[in-house]
Length: 247
Image 1: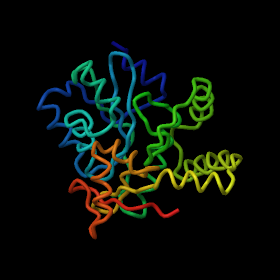
Image 2: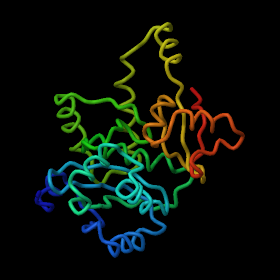
Image 3: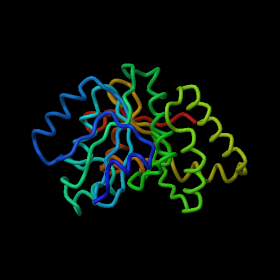
């Protein structure tokens, strides 16, 4: 078992809530009551080996994220497999940061930017996401991970939203050096159609490079998403709205 205090110190984290004994009904009730009407960034930590998952949740959905990942297994497959292997009692649910506003269409991107910042600075092993709100499955080499951690860890804590946005823009500018021919871009577009999955309130749940990728992340069949895209309401699994991404 890892030393939690040392783990948090090493990661330079000062969490607001830490929940243990996640297998107990009473713990789940406490989590639900504590986190009502709140939005923010959370961590799911494996106390055996120190692996963890980072995610964000819009207003009043932090508890939903907890049960979806650890009770209903509707999130990360890596996290699902780890929970089955070690048992729920070996995990902690940790709230790293609370977003101070009610999440809406206008400020939802700010929350995703903060999540992206934690993802890139902490590099959680259980995340298949490379940036907040998307699921491209890119795996960094160990050298890339070390370089990214060195760059982001120095800047991570107590940053203004403007600074976080600047970091995101810097990341974009690095990617601009990679260019593709028109033919290559056309071939890539033919192979995949990006889609956006939103919550019913209009906030973004995730952006995916293809229908297959979205289906894998949402634990449903490709045809389920394709069927939803053909309907007027675009309703998916009774809780999401799916649409093609405008490029």
